[in-house]
Length: 398
Image (cartoon, rainbow, N blue to C red; front, top):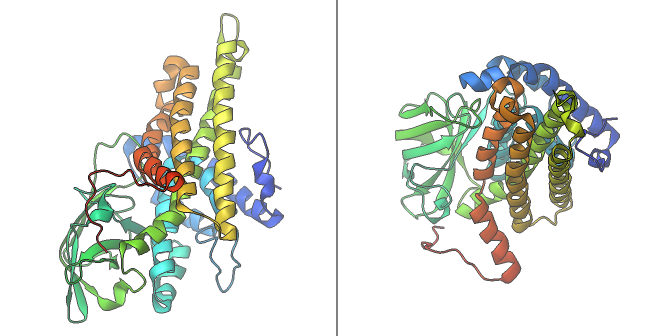
């Protein structure tokens, strides 16, 4: 059995089946023993630890919610707890995993043909081929649904892609990049798998990031990139298909936020118990306890929402606004939680060696990606009022 984390005060982990808890225990051990010792150094150098991938692959946790010939489908709740455990130690590695096992693999699984699934998914499961998801563009973030600038043009048995993508996680080393582009013939959004090394395709690492520094975000350019028809995802015909992928993965960011909050709670609690000021541990001060309990409350409240999102994904009752609300609230509370944890550390909180500063910075990325607070607010607002409050919107491209 997996023991609840110190921040899991209500023991939500006990909702997992015994076999699922065993899988989660392996993930926790890997995160604590293999990721934690190098997380600060990788973050500081903005380098990805490729040497961890064989050990990561041995966990066999890619595509847990999917049925494989040799493995049953596990619950979305287990997949979500895996994200939480990784984020508790290093949100960067959790983000890497979410891009590969979430966005990229889900795109192929939901939108690909059976031949494409057979061709790519087993290697992705083994982490022999790493995936990336290319949707955001230099001039398009929250408004990409209104029209992508990256274009696709049919030329015989091939497609020619032109344009650029930005903020693409895993982009510098991914073997398979899911590229969303606008078909110039019918103005609809289509999905393509661009393989590493394809002529005309370049990936340049984005420098100077202040959050999730271990994640290798890239600027991608497509200059007459030729993609065979066999690499077009036949189930990706409109942006609604893109959104099918996003709605599956958006709730995962809430779990990343919960994990990060759980991580800073443990850091702040341990520090408060050990740090002595005025002749006594600072944990004995009422204001410090207020910070600790406020962080704990944020974890438990966010975890409750995240658990329900995963359960509703499992039973088929999940809706967009539920993931949007969970992501919005969890990342809002994350911002407050990391600030409180940093305050418990005082000046020591800005030293990387104390880790809390890394979480403080990483929280800003979690707050922004997979739907900003403002966009998720409008998604939920539209659902509860029946009235869309989006302004400045262009006619949707289908």
